[in-house]
Amino acid sequence: MKKIEYFLDCSSPWTYLSFSGIMKLKEEKDFSIEWKPILVGGIFNSINPSVYESRKNPIKEKLEYSQKDMHDWSRLRGITINWPKLFPINSVKAMRGAFYFIDHGGVELYLESVFRSYWTEGKDISEDNCLISIVSSLDISPDNFLEFINTDTTKDRLVKNTQELMDRGGFGSPTFFIGEEDMYFGNDRLQLIKEIL
Image 1 (cartoon, rainbow, N blue to C red):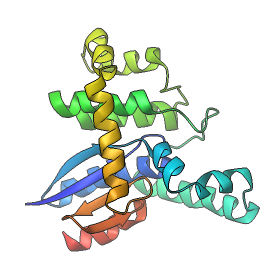
Image 2 (cartoon, rainbow, N blue to C red):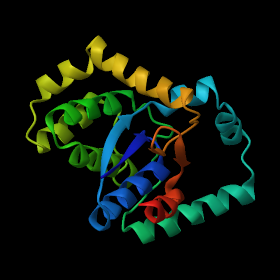
Image 3 (tube, one colour):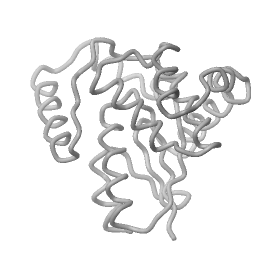
Image 4 (cartoon, rainbow, N blue to C red):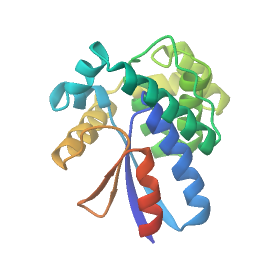
C-alpha cells in the first residue's frame, strides 16, 4: 500500500478543497494518509513572504479569476465555501488539536468539522469556545483537549512538521509527498496523484 504524507493547514480554502478531494480519492484507491498538520503562516513568514505582498496589492483580474476558480472547484468537490469575515485566521490551536485526533483516532472527522466551521459557517476557529463546540460534538472532553493543545510537546510537534515541510522544499498548504522526494503542491495536483496511485 502506498503512503501519502499530507501537510495541511485548515486556514486555506484550497486545503479544504484538497481535503474533500483526498477523502473521495480514498474511496477509489488503496493508500494510507500520514497526517502532517502545519502552520502555513510560519512558512510564509520564513520563506514565502510574497503571499502577503499579493494580499496587500492584489491584481484585480487575478483575484476575480481566483474566486471563480475556487467556486468551480467547490462545486466539483461538493462543498460550500463562503469567504469568512475573519481572514486570515490564526489556526494554531486548531492545528495543534489535529494531533489529539491523530493520537486518539477520528482526525478526518475533526478536520472536516474545523474546515466546515470556518469556510462554510464563518466561525472563528481561533477561539477556544469554537474548538470546544467542535470537540464536544465528537464526544471528546474539552478539558482534556485544551490541556493537550497547550502542552509544549504538542506545540513542538506543530513547529517540527512546519520546519520539516520547508526543509523538504515545501512552501505552502496543501502539500503532498509520495515517497521522500516526490512532492505535489495544490488541490489540483490530486489528479496527478490519482494517476500515480
